[in-house]
Length: 236
Image (cartoon, rainbow, N blue to C red; front, top):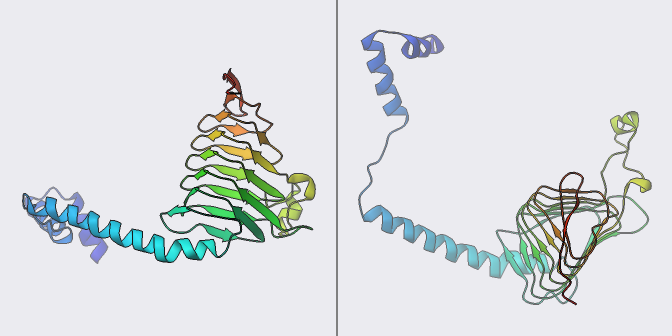
């Protein structure tokens, strides 16, 4: 009955039905008029309260809880937008003056002989929506910059054989590998770096690239699979 009425209101050419339909839309989605000055000030007050509340959570809640789960000196750690999700068997070591988005996921491989290790150096940026799948280890050396939505895929999580995948079996040791991003490298937005890859010192990985093999130091790579598109002048 109700659905039939809705369809009639939407599709009928009757002026009466059209009027009822407009009234129903107004009732369903009432609008408050904007008061000049007042709502602009209210918005600024909203931002102020939100910022103060977020900073208090960051300083007194998220940061100390996260620090309790990681090793290293971890001085001056700036954790923003919440707290990263830590999954699986994973040891995290963090040095000084790094910035980490709380909208990130750090996952250790749930099986294997050794516990997975995520090693974060000094002055490292880990942007929003980063996801690390750590098999043996992932190393971010000093001054590394990771933009948003970076995926460091140290393990796939599933075997190559479809029947074994259907049974829920884990990946094989031959499918996993370490990922090392050397000093000063910059990884752009949306990049995927696969297991066994080393990104050389000072290199730049262009946005949306898929890195399947080692990146030479002081180069720019781009594409899928990523290839060297430019050589940079060495700073040393």
